[in-house]
Image 1 (tube, rainbow over the protein chains, first blue to last red):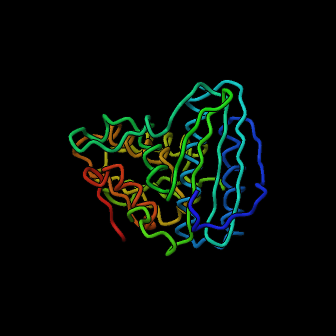
Image 2: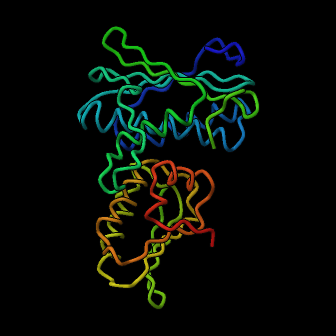
Length: 154
Length: 103
């Protein structure tokens, strides 16, 4: 965790069933934290996109449409927002599953699923993955615009 | 926020007008409309996205689906997408085969 971002000590927590219907609840939760941190429109969009893509991946590929739950823990502060997304699906490291666009392959032949993870990882300022006690834990940070010396490329 | 999808024909252009949020939950509505548009046989399919405030990779999947369903000689245009949405389309490299336009 960067010392540039000052965050609340106690996270706020949302736990939802791993369904497509719950993605809207996760988005609303994340955007509330973005608002509390004072993130501007662009940083809020990046945060929402990253969490949405990771959560969608858990629903579609992690639990493969079966029963499961997703826990989202969020901490906001004046410098940004940190979100931890947890699930009990089989171990999956998003960094290993990332699929950057391949210029040599026609768009219609590309795996869009891997692109979702790529979008998520290129939208955040910091990302870490851990597998602990049978749970996948992805932790990401989006900093307020102008506070990160190396922000994601526009 | 739900997605509102409308389909119309203007001259030789099939127009799909989208408004709302395009994500894993709402993309199936867009998919169904693309299937209908593919049967119109116009020379251009214009997807108006100025009213789309958010698009996830599910929207990219829909655009790829459009390329697969709609005949090769038909021009597919995405019109009026806001900056973060057009950035997502460019990140996926879809701007090489779909015309991105501001107007």
